[in-house]
Image (cartoon, rainbow, N blue to C red; front, side, top):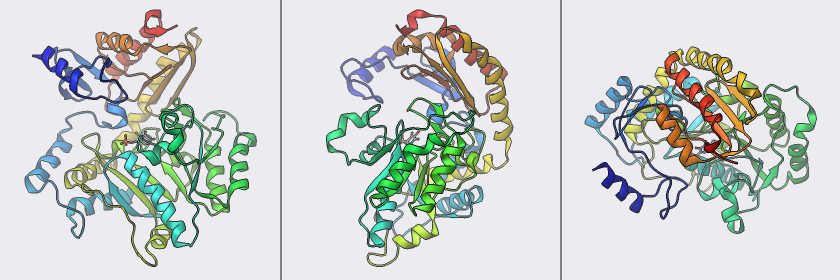
Length: 429
Ligand SMILES: *Cc1c(COP(=O)(O)O)cnc(C)c1O
């Protein structure tokens, strides 16, 4: 039965960034619980990924399930045009409690990439209303903002999917990525490229967009908080809206509720996604200031022109609200601190290993950067046999476990990496 399912899967169903002719192997999941996946074979593995940053409370959290069931029985979906409902209202109230006072106007949408589309449209419509047709964005190399076209247009131009669509994407501005890490001493030269773009192209730049503190898919690099401070300052001086993409880093992952808090800044537009529903379902949000929202809503057509069919989906809103109210109990902070300490103790000693370039740890994120790319197929199998679910990319093996992990799970996760790096056959040498 399982074999038949897998054959059907391989023949008909596309998986992320994969081929339909010769896809990488897939593992069928039977059930989830806490930090565990149970595979169809009956094997239990610890999820070290939180299903791509999302399942921060682990799986099958009874409180999240309860609220979802209650909402299903009441109503699952209604259009948001001309209609509102308590799940959306309560979620937005809850969001405002954890956001800076400046960020007041919330646009609910389906996924992270769409939240980026919405943010970029907000910026364009903002300038339109100011009778200015600026349309280019300034961003930094190494960025990742999603897979839809506008999002791709601000992803790294050489090192990402951007390259595939180069000829049809608008030509935005790419400053050199920050070089100084989170822990290094600040030197002003790190911001020169960005500063230069800003000064030379201020008439053309409509908005700035970047990931705060952590550049994710671009290599899992933590950059200097001073860089983000300087970007904020320059955007202020040149009166250019700053979009901060917290889709991966939001909701506690880096040790702060939002990563921009490390730099003590407030963006003009904030994009949230991934962990917004605690990994239960898809939902994202783009949140902006009154100033931008009011400017957009000024003069004909007095509107912000975007409106997904499943905007404000009540099930997603109800569970997201519960997720945030769980976070507001502040247990996550101790959990994330604990994970950070554990990672530092167990992984930093590996730094001398000849396979390893660098080890970076911040909050509940551990990054092991290797000299060679992994053989994804083999290393995946190796990790499954070890009892963990870790999905590296390129030469990066990283952990972003659910905040509820205990010592035994952390031990197994870190041991599995220690063991993997001893093994030549798991790397493409
Ligand atoms: C995942 C991610 C996105 C895209 O979100 P989707 O829900 O996959 O569309 C955008 N930006 C960052 C930083 C992300 O990590």
